[in-house]
Length: 92
Image (cartoon, rainbow, N blue to C red; front, side):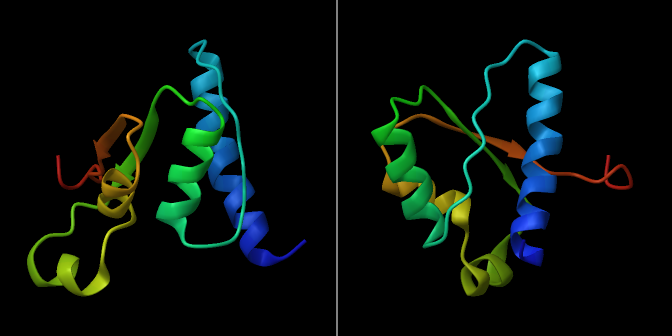
């Protein structure tokens, strides 16, 4: 297993476990490609009701230079996307 695949499975596994504890149906899917296209295609092809994504809260020049998978996903799909603002405990 590649290091990237292991990290992906660890990250999605953590979120899936928390969601399942709350009774939310979860499907984990790992694939290669342009993230926003992969997310949009998967959601539309699998009759997904809602895509939930985190935001790192970048703004200004950093956001323009780095791009945003979340923003690109919003523009790539007609499936509703819920963006959860990321803030560390120090920023609250």
